Length: 129
Image 1 (tube, rainbow, N blue to C red):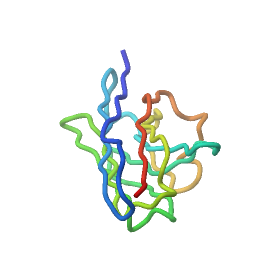
Image 2 (image 1 turned 90 degrees about the vertical axis):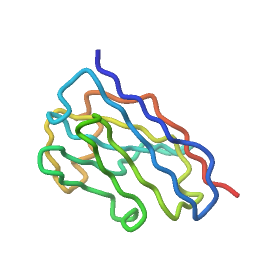
Image 3 (image 1 turned 60 degrees about the horizontal axis):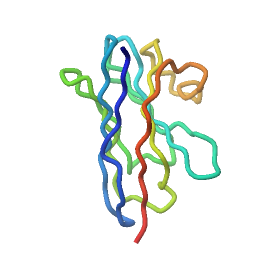
Image 4 (image 1 turned 60 degrees about the vertical axis):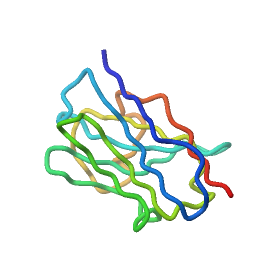
């Protein structure tokens, strides 16, 4: 059974930090590109970042560079999203998802929803004072 379980969400003040985790099981970790998405109230789901375990390559949306970092621990089959200097606009439900090609394209194609095979249940992140 394929499972993706996110954790680490919560309430944080502007300027604060959170680290999200996504524990995956039920498939070969290296065979899939691992990505984070988010969906704010009333908005479409948007890609945040992707990583490949094959070569460690990562793709992060330009507006988030300098604040967010994606990483993975192959031994733990876990993907992380470190979020720093957080802003109220970062408030959203954050989802972990995987697609079966383990390639990073460094374009919007990385976040094409039709490519993704499995999704987590999401974790709420709220940035507010």
